[in-house]
Every structure is written in structure tokens, then in C-alpha cells.
Figure 1: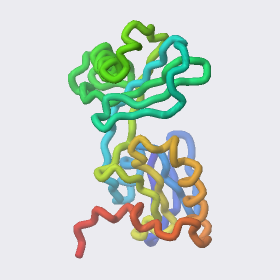
Figure 2 (figure 1 turned 120 degrees about the vertical axis):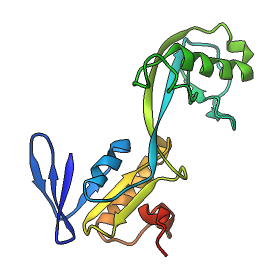
Figure 3 (figure 1 turned 90 degrees about the vertical axis):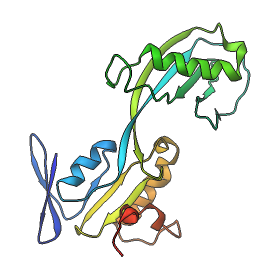
Figure 4 (figure 1 turned 30 degrees about the horizontal axis):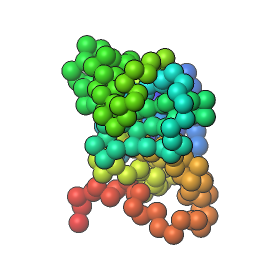
Length: 202
């Protein structure tokens, strides 16, 4: 996908099958936003980070809270059904036999399980019923980018959510709508989310 501008303003979105014209365009495509924005010279410093999730068989209820650790061994919760849903970042994606592709690997899953058992030894014999993996769009400072692009009039972006997308999506969507319709913000200050906060210009 590519963007095209005309006299400093966004004009076209070019896909493999169509060309669309608009006065305003929102780029909200996760990590792929970086390449799309790059077609008009805009860059957001972010990387892809692989995370893996496991779901266990049902166990007796232990706790209702969402849990996570400062060491980032794991995060997750127990469902009402009794299954545990845990995710984790292992840092092994560059060393796995899958060469970093979006599939689960024994190295990563084993690392996540060891982190869980360290805090919950009672789960040592709990069976895993399924697992999957995906990629986060992680910003340099771990803060999302929700911003108008001043260099390209009419262009907006919402990306680099750094793993917080599901949690803050409702509020973010509301603020994106306000941003694009020139309404007053419900949030007093959106400057912390500007895309150009990394600029080295004085």
C-alpha cells in the first residue's frame, strides 16, 4: 500500500487492487504503518516484537485479577471457565527455528511456562490446550503515536501501541475521531502522543 500527496496534502491511497482519493486519511496498520507512512517521507521509530499466548485446561478458581510481572515473564488472567490465558515476551524470536515467523515455538513457549510456574508452582502439571503468537508494534518509548502529520496536510496516524492496543482502543478511537473532525479533545493534552516527539530539529 502506498500514499500519494499533492501540493503538500494527502490525495491518494494506492492498494494492489484500487486507488482511493480522500482529503483525510488515517494510517492505523500496526507495524506496517511504518512502511505506509514512509511512502510520503514520514517515519515512526518502532519495531516488531513477537509475543506468544497459551491457554490451559480449566482449573479451580484461584484469582479474578489480571496479573503481570515487572520482569515481563508473563501476563494474563483466569477466565470464568477456569482456563488460564497467559502471554509473554521471551526475546528468543531471533534464535528460534521458525526464523521469527508468526508461529509458536517450543523455546518461547517453554520460557513463558517457566515464568508462570515460578510464581504459580501449583500450575506445574496443568495442560496447555492451545497456543498462538503474534507481533506487537512497539514504539521506541513504548508510548502510542496518535497524531496529525503536519508535513502532509490531511494525514493522520494511530500506531505503535506497544502492546496496549486492546486496553486503550476505545479511548484511542474516540480521540482519533475528535482529532480528525476538528472537535475539542476530551483529553486535555494529546501532545505526548505526537509522532514528531522524536524529531531532532531545534
